[in-house]
Image 1 (cartoon, rainbow, N blue to C red):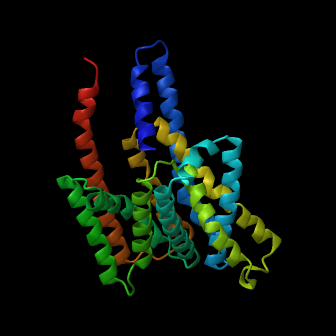
Image 2: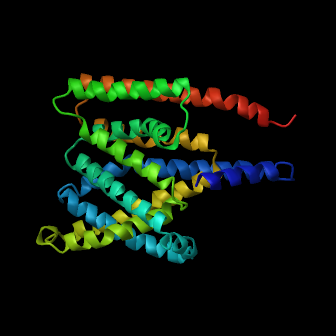
Image 3: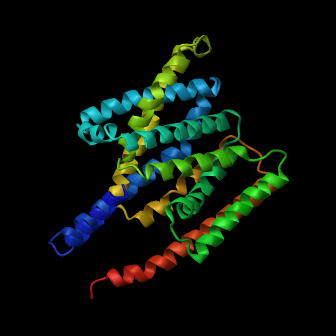
Length: 318
């Protein structure tokens, strides 16, 4: 995905001197921005969907999500004739082991998020996704030997204080926020080591999880759902895959720095959904932790801007 974005950026630069290329480039970027916003807005409002099926046990919702996502992705990839991109990965033992680990991590992430919505703890979930990008930076340092700049260290430490504050000042440990951030952070780390895009990778992961999901759905606990509920659950495949399709377009058409800024749209909307629609209480401990988290994000964004400005000035033609 990263390589694809870089290739497209280089291609855009190469066409800069051609007639009409400036107009085409603006349209290209604008459509990418709209697709990126569509993806993150969908992820931001996804708690509303899981709230609609909150009367169904979380494991049952998870198994339906796996089943319908796998089915929908098979149809999409067949229509797009993209199986040739997947077969080489299936024949690679290392890639399959990594995707097996990724499947376990995404299953944990999905289950905990569904539970967070059902148990009216969306604020904790949004905090986890605010922390996740900063945790990913830290994991990159630990496992990929990436070096953190001074301001990045400050941002990571502030995010750590935000979690510690919530743990010390709340009655319970904020395990939902920590689990969501950690599972998605390690998921990104594992997926970075596999040469496959997000949509194709998700198909392989859901197919790995599918046998377990089908066995669980065969138990009586998963039966007795009304036709209306089954209809809602069948939409989980579309709700899971469509934002990924938009995201794939955005990654190909936007700078990675723009994607980095857009990623905070999702948890911000989840925060608003939790407070405005679900009326979750925003106590002093939670508010302090969110404030610290927003401060950490501001430091991270400032570092990105400061670092990128000299590079963009150097790239400008004289």
